Length: 218
Picture 1 (cartoon, helix red, strand yellow):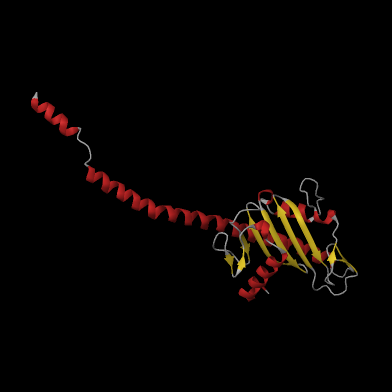
Picture 2 (tube, rainbow, N blue to C red):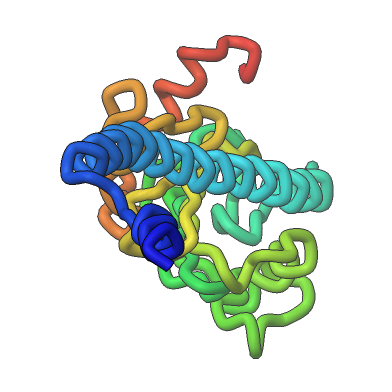
């Protein structure tokens, strides 16, 4: 009977204080190593997704602008840049869209003056956009249009660059042709902290950097 009680006491014996301290120390080290690694992985993953989305938007918008360029070839009027078009050089378009709705569409015509564009051409509201409008066309080509915020700069009929994010105020901003590699930081010296803080000047600088960095784009 005494031997049985002795064996039972040996079986229920637990960890010593030293063993507990060693285990806690090992767990702390693992957490210290793994948490930053996991955060970096998530950051890279979100930026990779945003950069990929920006590239899709870039190509989609370029397809649309090529259609307009082909249609307006030889015409004296442009849907974007206005009438009396003689030298089709120097026109510029800035588009900003949030959740599938175009909230800003500014145009400078060939003469460097601000140009008013018909709402039927823009198609800002996805629910009421005419099928031939920019908004409707990009919605048909780009499947994630309603879940993405983005801005694009177009010169003449050529897309210069696109910035993209899953919301207006996120710091995870993707881009194309230049692809940001860090959250809410600089991309080739261009400050990209939030998508809703991107101005025309920032887009112009971003696109200039992109085309200088990769001469093959020209």
